[in-house]
Length: 408
Image (cartoon, rainbow, N blue to C red; front, side, top):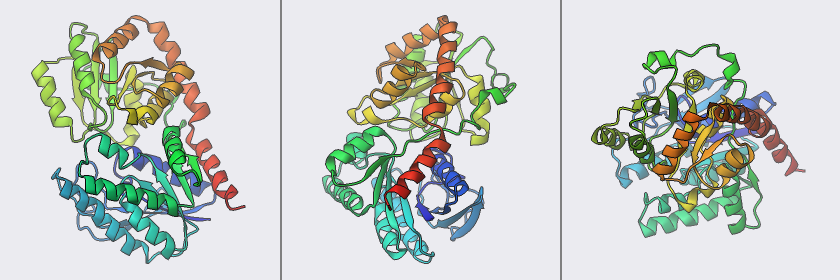
């Protein structure tokens, strides 16, 4: 079997889709699939071409045995809608002209968002004689509309039409969450829709393999501090203001410390908010490579995972959940719906707080600071649940079985 992954985002960029797709590619290759990746010159999230790729020419490279083909992309630090569209459509154009020169494939799997990449995917799947697998990690344009990121009615109509066309052309539609799968299945009842969840490499994220982490010493935290950690993109959807507001309520509790690690469009605003509230218990740290994350997670006590209070996120499972749980770190989960059902109600691997409710978040943090035995039980539950249900190797084998079954 020959399979091409088409995605705008891929390592060495750091992020959820980059990591998820690469891990899938590596495991598919290990199970006999000839797999290649067609992607952009790495630029996310800083919106500048990474060092070593600056000349913007097409590049070929190998990453962990995977052939990666890179095409040009327009990047700009401007946050205007025009700049974002130029970013998306430049890769739509360049990916098609790069991809059309490749050999035939049995399958082309495209990552959405950005939904616009569907234009290139549909043309390339025909050109390369490949069946189209449309992988949906976010219900775009629905999420962009509800978050207020895209408000132009004409553009939204075009995007919804494109969404329908992409699904109609797909041999198989895969959704990252059960909520995404259910939504698409209701609207496109004649399509084959499959749950392809995110997961975790339980051998890489394994706290038992790490004897000692220097993270606390390196950042001047005490061993007795309760470290509540958010790591990831500092974006609109996360609603990270709730962490700073909760920290303000707990400012007198010197042993409860909040860490926000990452970068993104909201970072400057959040740093300004910290200064305005004069928060000594909130610490901003720069993102680190994936190779360093087990050391970070080993040292913290609880992972804080918030999203804004929108019905849209009822089916969301932020990827950062899996790594934390695999490292035996319970959650303070500000995400209702599917994530709450899995990790709080079924796994008992943390506590739920109402999204955007800083009082509930503060109360949960205070409870865990005063109940170490409960914290320990949640930690053990965390590792067990993701190992059973969200191990990447198991997910890959099930996905491969699905592809094989629909051809019989």
